Image (spheres, rainbow, N blue to C red):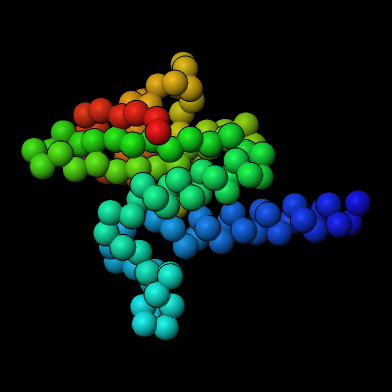
Length: 134
């Protein structure tokens, strides 16, 4: 029994470490020297692979999660990716800014609703044009 509990604690700790290290911001982790800890520095355009890594870690720990890829209404067609997951009966999104709870859509298949909620919760003024699950 203690071995199973220790294994679960290690798995949960691993997920939180991943959530802390991975994001989609190009400013790096505050207070971390990039030369000393290059793995903790956040690179441009890494939101998609990082969201996929977090998704896999959550799934491996029995937590439902998906990656949502979305594009903004800006002329340069930029986009972003977040990991959406269920925790304690609530729907959450994760990216480099952290985890934010969002409203539950009428259907969990509504990627556009989830993407717009993710941007709204982060107080972003950017408008989401389209979204899809990967």
